Amino acid sequence: MWASKLFTILAAASLVLGSKTPALGIKQGKIAITSPDGLHDATYPLEPPTSLSQPIVLSEGSTLKLTFNSVDKASGNAVFPQQAHLLFEDSKGGEDVTLPVSVKSNGRASWTFNTAKPISALTHTHGPLHLTLLLSALDSHTPLHYPIGELQLPSSILKAPLRRRHDLPPRQGEPAFQPQQELFHTFNQGEKSVGFIKSALGTGVVLSPWGVLLGLYSQISPKLDYKTPPSSAYLFLVSLAALEALIFVYWVGLRLYQLLPMFILLALVSAYTGKVALKALRSQSAR
View 1 (cartoon, one colour):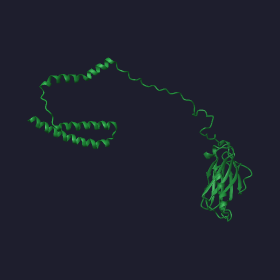
View 2 (cartoon, rainbow, N blue to C red):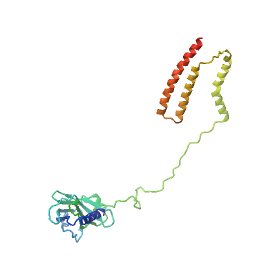
View 3 (spheres, helix red, strand yellow):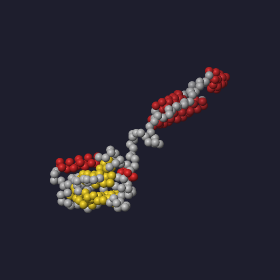
View 4 (tube, rainbow, N blue to C red):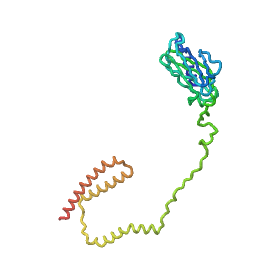
């Protein structure tokens, strides 16, 4: 249907743009029907714009051959059309089918349809087809829209029409939309809280090394000789604290590329202050 409308629009546009534009036509056009037994052989001459008065009925095993010469309607000279198609319009509202026609450079065209090897697109039609010839030479000639007539395909080659996505009812054995079984999710049970006694025992085990350390320190503290550390030692401790703070800030919200420059700088400062602090402590203990 869309192809027929398109060619009608092109023809109307050509008439509006200029009446001097030559028109496409055909001559020596005919449709020849041959059958295996020869009983259904027939020939239908084509004389545009007159359509065939009776439908073309194909029997099983018969062959249809369409031939014509594409010419300038006024001069009769051969014209090579850039577009040549046959439009099959389904009279029962099915999908229309458009098939290309082979055209030689001298304008000689032919199209063959063998019912023994049918074209798949035509086998899904419903009934009689309105056959239309469409020719176009773009801007050089007015397009040709020639309704040839009706074509009846043998019922033996017809198949069930193609189903669209939302055609109802669904066929037997085909998947269809239907309620599905409800899904239930099983989650693991939450962790049980540890009792107070177990928590207290665990805390005691963790803190016991500190208790041992404090007990030993209380015994050796009277024997220790406390000396005031040099100022460089405090600088070393400050640099270490700054490193720890930087790592914490990185963990909270910094990127790795933001951390590395500051980390390298503080690491160098810590290494230098540590070296100075060790020298100062060594000289202090040597006195």
